[in-house]
Image (cartoon, rainbow, N blue to C red; front, side, top):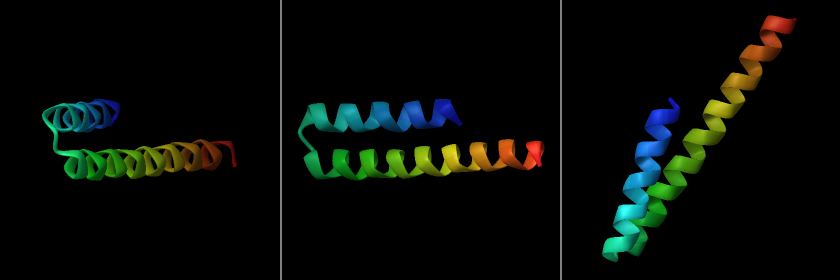
Length: 51
């Protein structure tokens, strides 16, 4: 999962560098959403294990 997030972030950096600001912003937003979802999933699974 972390590899996927890194690849999306890398793609966002490349698109920003080539000048496609909107596409980079979209990729970055998708990356942030995925990171939050993954984090929440990770936390909830940890809590479920403790319960």
